[in-house]
Figure 1 (cartoon, helix red, strand yellow):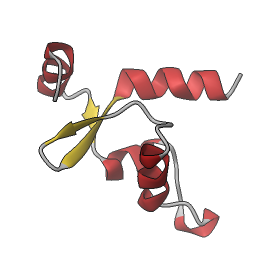
Figure 2 (cartoon, rainbow, N blue to C red; figure 1 turned 90 degrees about the horizontal axis):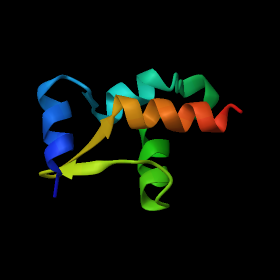
Figure 3 (cartoon, rainbow, N blue to C red; figure 1 turned 180 degrees about the vertical axis):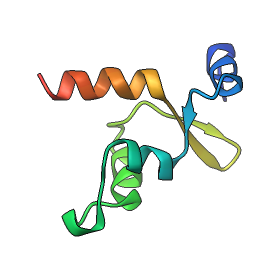
Length: 72
């Protein structure tokens, strides 16, 4: 279930798919990291995400905050 804020962000193009998130996080096959890593992190509850139908969505802003916290 999405919140009004998530729906608003989706309309503004602020939502990423799993593939876009992998690219954003610069996951690369040569590092043995790929979109399946994202699904693993989702199962562990390590990523801020929401479902849109059967697909996952990620707020660019929330992921940006997470990356900042991880790099401190």
